[in-house]
Image (tube, rainbow, N blue to C red; front, side):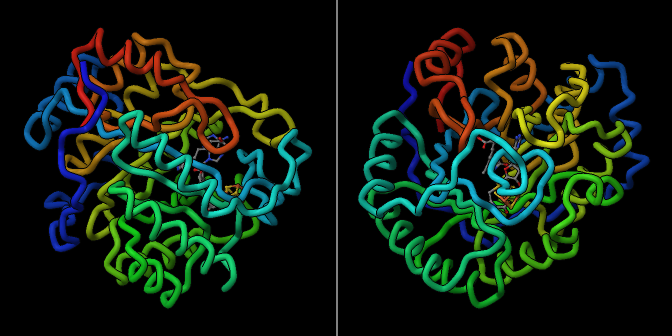
Length: 330
Ligand code: SAM
Ligand code: DTB
Ligand code: SF4
């Protein structure tokens, strides 16, 4: 078994961004959710096989380059300065520290390195520092991704010029539920950032979180928003809420694990050519549950023992899982 990617790390031109031939309605997505589980997973697996190697999983490693002290109030997030969590605010990391982590991620087999910062949006000085990191990570032969908060068109343009391949900015949830989770920025602000990223010519990584107390219709509503972005995001992270003490969403009733698998399957069917990433929350999932998620069309994971501030399965556990399931990194 080889976690080391053999595929070249060149990123496909943006003109290849998937267009969705099907315009999905919320009702049509809800109807998918309501299918018998076996029928749903079969449809998802069929869509998956039409577009991807069914046993290939893309590996992205995350690093928090600026942790905590965030002015936003996202109800799920341990990094908000407004929530009494154990996460302390830290200064931005040095480029050297970031490159050491990127080198280690590459050696462990990751193909993409994602840098996250707890900002509402980057200031001029922040952006200059991150650009230095991006150039260094790219020089190591890794794909680059960043998630830095809201961007203005000129900031997106500068990131693109520095060689940033992907920008992650999530819609997080359905429009109708959004206002219950986040009060410091609007849904439209997120759409504006996504438009700026697209306009600058970068690949879009955009997904959301489930298990925040939303209804099934709202899960369908999130996928509706994502699948109707034009072009569709190349990368779609589906996060299962990691409940952190001190955050407003700590104590939310846990989602039925099969409903999580259904969400992955619906993402795969509605965005058949996109990478669907089994994202936060993997540490709490059994190997069997993860196998179901891969069967339902997930073909990317966050790889490495930490997400931004919370835990993730360690490399040995993932290597063993890949071995047991005959999966390979790509
Ligand atoms: N501060 C930037 C922003 O929010 O735009 C970038 C980093 S932010 C931590 C990136 C994403 O992580 C959020 O949009 C959310 O989807 C996800 N996230 C944060 N905390 C989470 C949690 N406890 N469980 C699951 N996903 C989480
Ligand atoms: C995404 O959709 N999930 C990642 C990444 N994009 C930046 C972040 C998950 C964060 C989980 C909570 C934490 O570790 O702080
Ligand atoms: Fe800040 Fe991002 Fe966390 Fe929201 S999700 S509080 S913007 S770090």
